[in-house]
Every structure is written in C-alpha cells, then in structure tokens.
Image (cartoon, rainbow, N blue to C red; front, side):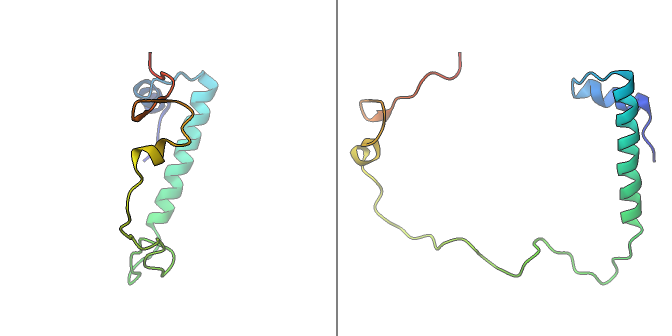
Amino acid sequence: MSVTTKDVAYIAELARLKFTDAEQERMTDELNMILHYVDKLNEVDTEGVEPLNTIHDQINVLRADVEHTPLSNEEALKNAPDRQDRFFKVPKVIG
C-alpha cells in the first residue's frame, strides 16, 4: 500500500491542515516510509512470542490506597489566594 499526494490532500482537509506543494510531497514521502516500515514489521516472525503489555515484571508500583480523614473546607482553603464563601475563587478562563 502506498500513499498518494491525493491521499495526503484528503487527510489534510480532514485535519484542517494546509500544505504547500512541497510540504505535501514531503508528507507523502514520509507517510510512505512509515508504511514501508510497518510492512517490514509485519514480516517479523512472532510465532511463540508472548504478547506483553509492559516491559517490566513489576505488578503494581503505586502506593497502597489507604483511607484517611479528608480535609475540612477551612483546612483546604487555608492557603487559597482568593476564596468566596467555601469555594476557591479563580479568574474567569472562558469568555
């Protein structure tokens, strides 16, 4: 399978990208190189190789989930730069 400049133009349109002709040619070449590499990987004999979902044998590297008393509102807001009643007050982000 190979990618044409027409394919790249279509993908660019879907992604709302604009490429110059030179960029489109370069992108076509790069995508074809990637597909060629994937084809090479498909040729590798993986018979008898166990699939893995991690590269190490550690089972759980997270700390134990221990129940504890939550902070009170006052404790949580103690260092807040600004607050309104029992809530953190932050600058408006969305218009």
